Image 1 (cartoon, rainbow, N blue to C red):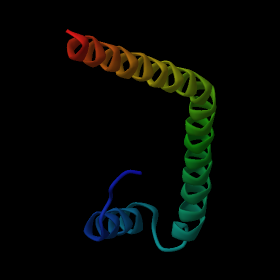
Image 2: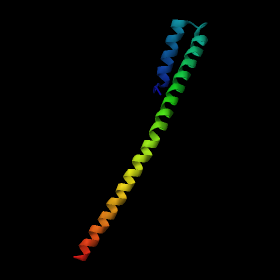
Image 3: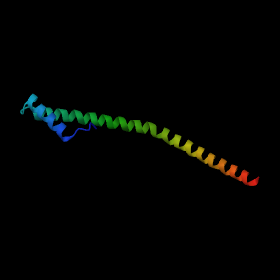
Image 4: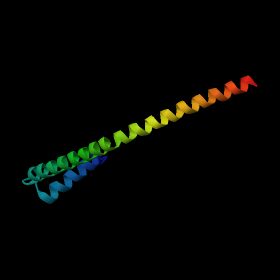
Length: 86
């Protein structure tokens, strides 16, 4: 989600260790973990709701496109038939 590598996490951990101290670091880590979990769940729910709202529209658009392709194919066949009849 945030594209954070090992060295970035290590640097953040070291900064937290110096700022917060070793006594309070587990408490802060737990707090941050819970909030990141809530944030991640919120984004997943948002993504799922957007997908569910747009899925019916996407299906309708795909159906219209397929119908248009079928009409174009039929027209091409009729044009080819008309050319052969000349």
